[in-house]
Length: 145
Image (cartoon, rainbow, N blue to C red; front, side, top):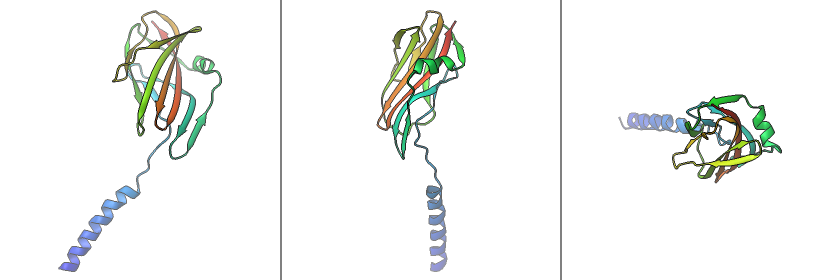
């Protein structure tokens, strides 16, 4: 009876540990989506250190942003910055819009909500993320209707 009990305890332990061994964690920089408008932003500059070093340098982020598919949003529309993973500590997030050479910072609340500008027109959008794992910059192209 005692050997049967040891066998059962051993099998339960083996099955419990096998779930931990098979885990595959992703420590790459996150993807960024503006949730309400379903706009996927493009990585521009990355300096990320986690399980390995991730680097990407874009000299002209505005040119990269212009090349992205332009997405329409409503004037003053409320949106939310969403990351596909968050296995890092966020230190700061900033969101900006560019119209020609004018750069305007949008107000971001603690829940990562913000409002698009009320002025209609074509804009480029930039999100800057600073974490304990490094920094990442993302861009997109929007048309405010």
